[in-house]
Image 1: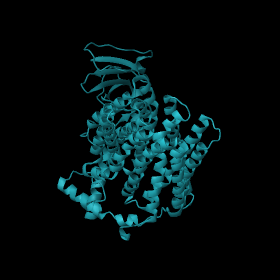
Image 2: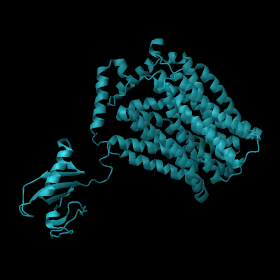
Image 3: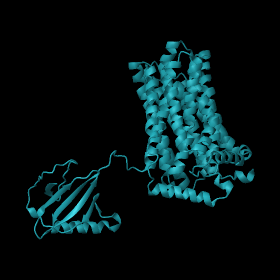
Image 4: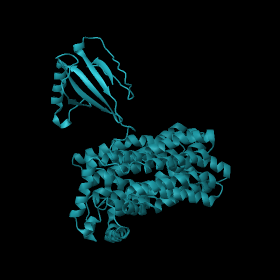
Length: 552
């Protein structure tokens, strides 16, 4: 046993391994003011015997009384338990024991839900890195393989084929098997497909197929993450969880556009796909072994218990609309899926003008977003004479600015509603800003006004950043009109919203080959959809709650 002596107000770090020999560390002051620590080795924790003066013992006692019995005798993170009185400092001494538990790895005791949310957000970072990598690599790939703009547009649009097809199936699979399993498979699928791009690049059908697989893997991820959050995250933490997870998309866009040019210039365009693909495989390995068997903490247990209780108290049809988080047999799950699909009021959805307004608005917004996401680096490189690294880096400005605009738009909308402005009016204002701002900026950029390249970059970045007002407009309307069917409505509009990724990206390349004009090929169609989308939204959009079950 090793004995350590130090002042009460000093901190001493003691190693785990100790020898049987005794040693002492004394600090200046009298022995009355000293604190004696006797180290008792243990395999799992460090135990200390603390010998202190009566005056110091009184201070510790008062400290425990202040903390209260509910803390279990924890003082500044140290558990203190009174033992027998012993000699050591004469009649004025007593002994206490302090336990320091050292846990490895450091994140072992982090609640399971936080680890899942953190790793899911990281998956979304990798998701958008693999989405934007081709928009940078397409430039050297086109030069190497002799692709014209039409072929380049076809290659970039193939991602959205799989993305559009997997939206609704992703939700159903998450309900069948749980979002965690679907997310694992989705990340593994898109990561392997990403790593195969350099191998298949010389064979166009194989390259298109690999990008379709990337789209399918990424397409199931939003539904899988939503299911995971609903199963494990309590209501009072859910908004922060959703923001943290889906905020990974913007981080992924910025990271991908920052890293890709450097990798391409130093190691070739193939390195982007190999490294980004390996990142996803590494994530899968870590997430796959993320202590699924670890016990839930009190908050998680209470949340799961509430879900089970709610399911038991509902009727058969109502329970199908909730995530029960329980393991069911294959046959029962298939039957549940069949009945749940049958109970969805599909006809009522498509009889509602507000739903059609959401569908068209989602289509129009996605046209501008996906075409610019895919073609802006090429536009900056060819039209503004920027090199590859400069073109990619200026493409970061819109998603970076969007992060700030999103927070401003949310506060703006919430303040209007809190001050009594009708919800429908607020949603129309926000969505109108989201459409008219990029349309105006694109008009200015396409006209021959003698603007400098940096001025065009600034104008486009501002316009595309302001399009983030849609998060307080269109994307809130699904929950406004029907909380019960919000996820299904989002699946419908998201599926239609993925179509511009297929048609718009390819059409932009075709028009560019035909007209050799960026104004006609990239900006004119987006301006048209932004303006018509504004008209339809202002005329038919509504945030008034609708009972689709009764109307059906």
